[in-house]
Image 1 (cartoon, one colour):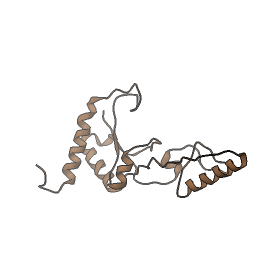
Image 2: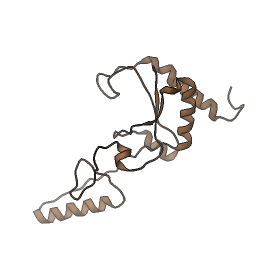
Image 3: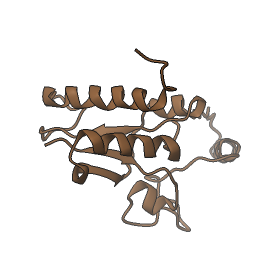
Image 4: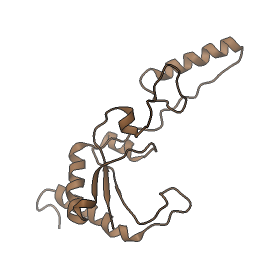
Length: 161
């Protein structure tokens, strides 16, 4: 049975957004949680410089901002939801999927063009990017139908064959 899930379009607290069980910020920082923001690279470089001076060593900080946060646009999310409900049982369309901590290249694309990232469920028990993953090809027509229907609903009337 196929299911389609979209990522919620709004960002609230780190607990809710990342599905965390505990608050990631405290008086003593936990290295498991590092949310870089504006100015953090300067602060980290200053910390490295202070440690280097204190311990008479040389520290080179290589700080890279390589991953963007993927946030769906509300309008595009609604389109995916409406289309999905015409292709699979509406009870199998989930619009409040639990956010994931992994990175997704599509986040960079959505900084240039509004969009909605969604998942199509499969019968397998092993997630993608796992050596044991086997593609459930029964989901291919569902995915193709979702994309085709999105195109049909988004293009101006008469502009497609």
